[in-house]
Length: 263
Image (tube, rainbow, N blue to C red):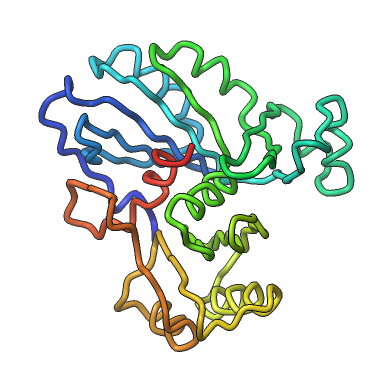
C-alpha cells in the first residue's frame, strides 16, 4: 500500500501544531504533524532526496513545534546488551553482516530500550544530524526495532507486527524480556504468512493461541487479511489510542503513531 494515497492536510490553526513525526524508509519518508490534542492533522510522503529541503522548510514555517521525532526503518541495525557494548568496537559489530561500502556516507547512532538494558546500533543518513541541528525544537532519533520493543512493553502485547508495502516488521517479547525483531521482504501475500508462521514456530508459539497486533497497510477485507486470519485467528488490527483527522483507516498511520509514542 503506497502511503502517497493516504496523505491529507486538515490543519486549521498552525499555532496548535506541536509535534512532527518523520519515518525514514529506503527511498522515501512519511511525515505527520500532531496538534496539541495529539491528533494527527496532516500527513504526507516524499522522496528521501527531498528530506533536506523538507527539514529546511520547517525553519520558515510558523509551526510552534516542541518536538520532532525521527524513526528509521532501514538496515543495517544490530542489537547488543548494554553491558557488552563498547563504542570503539562499533565497526567490528557490523563486520561480516554488511558490506563496508554499504555504510559509506552514513552516520552511526544508537538508542536504548526503555524496559531492558539493550542497545540498537544502526546507521542513518550522514547529514541528518546537521539537518536536525537547525530545527528550533527538541529532536529525538530512533530505530523501528527499538520503538516496536518499547511499544510491546507499553501496551503489554507479546507479538507486534507492522506491514509497509513489501516489508513485514515483527517484534516479539515474552513477559518482560525482548526476544527478537526482524524485517522480511514479502512480494506475495503467501510470503507474509510464511514469515509469520516461521517466527511463531521458531519461538515455539502456537499461532492459534497467540494474539497478533498488526498495523500498517492491511484491511480486514483484503485477501492478505483473510489469508492470515485463517492461520492467525486472534488478530488485533490497529491502535485504538491513535487519533487521526482522516477518512482513511487509522491503522494506516501506525508508523507515525509508533514514532510519536515510542521514539
